[in-house]
Length: 311
Image 1 (cartoon, rainbow, N blue to C red):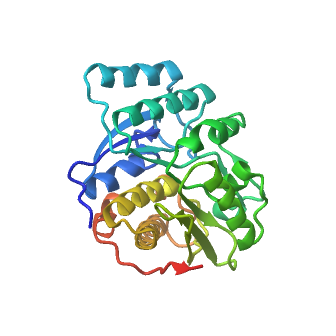
Image 2 (cartoon, rainbow, N blue to C red):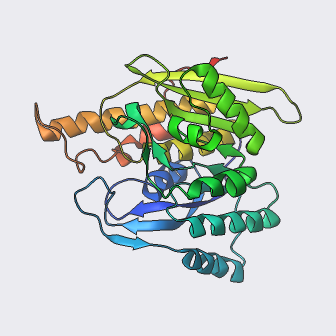
């Protein structure tokens, strides 16, 4: 297993004061797994937007530039990994593109994991059709600026469709879309969740171009669909995938560990939420906050209960 002693992650995504989403969902598991984490919050809200009220601040491109310039002035802008998640404005995302290129000048071996948070579709959030989380103008920035710089990209099904223009109705459609994503730049593509399985199943798909080769490795992993609305699971997924790919240097094992962690966390979360809500009552957003800290042992030593099948 590869060492994480000198691994430093810069994580750029949303954050909340209370609860677990964005950087609050990604930082703890990365630190538990031995990574030094520095964070930039694209937004900082009191709580996630699923509550009836949320308040806070939204950073702009100038804020991002100012924070990064402070790192440069002190020569503390050396990172081994970059992780990006929710970014809500075009100018901020364009600024991130500039920063990625500067980070690569400092470390040509930087690993960039991009979670292109733009929206979600039916089965995963209980909605009919796709739901955008961000202005549609971000799509072209992801396609033309960000993905060409990414090593690993982790869209959900809806985001993969947006990025490629491929309507994903079958597994063959998904592999076609993933091949297009490879062509945009990333060597590793993981569709974190899709509705390509039976109604009680969520399907994850992963493909990677082997180093120094044109050959591919591809995997499918099935996991149970839990009919609840979870917030922060995609951020947790991307962070754990970054960690386990670095530690194990094995996509299949990293995918299995990541999925097993996420499933352990959401199972613990929904069990606790229903206990608090009482029989027959719908849990509140507060009760459905991820039981992340309580899942520390599952994050550190995940028990693989879902197997990735080679395709």
